[in-house]
Length: 363
Image (cartoon, rainbow, N blue to C red; front, side):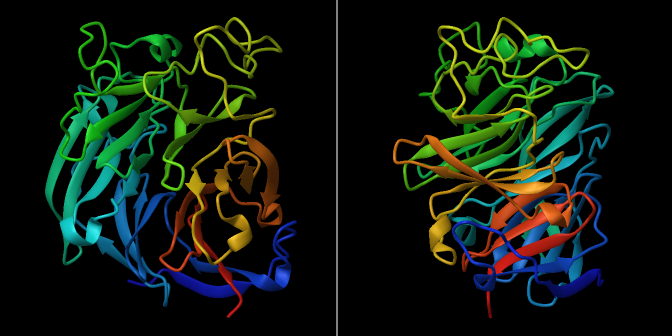
């Protein structure tokens, strides 16, 4: 099956750190249906998910797309569907691929973490690792991105599901970042493991709708980006057991008027974001760049923007503070959904219009 459109687009990058003649932007393929997640499964193959409930593999050399079978039923309604796809650092040895998707629980969607293996373009050994306690009938704020640390743990986010009090309710997984062993077991050092008033999988809480989650192995940090309401998108440095404030504190306003959400922007015992956006950019993903293809970008965060249609580059200092922001590829005028890094350090991104692009060095 071919759905490719492989040609170079010579955009001026307009980057303060890289000149235009160092970078090319190529469109790899088009005609997809909201490519929500992407992960490299070989040096030249990206496994991608489509929110409507389909999987495919795109060849980064030719742009050819092949389809993958073996998915379970996907509850693709509202903002739910087949969401992230991710592979751990030891993927070549173990073969496990991890997914988040919305599962039908009596007519309501619940964000679910699962894993499977891939053989001959078919998934095998599909296993739901955690069907979260998050089901509502709102159709909103499922999350959900996946990250792996260097100790064998997996993290994924669940949005508040459109029910604001969920963010402060430790008896629901909604509005939280969760931490598990890769087989689905709960680590005994999770912050609420022995707390009968909380769910043991919760690592942090007080989140509105996490849309990006990435492990910074250089500094052993977990980064998250989430949607605020009308303004107040946040980049957070996620720490064990911490409360990130939603909906008690926020830098956003109510949709119905210029009124602050909750009690204000700060409160004792609640974490402050590393960076917030007013107005909202509507983030779709988060990437920590640690490769050598673009050395001036090393150690930067990149976020795909849906509403403001660009790639957001954030420079960090040694303490993890955001010190500079740059908005790339605004002229492309695309809702940027997923981001991933190739083995050689090129940045691939998908758009809600069904395209996949690559930012690479000049050949």
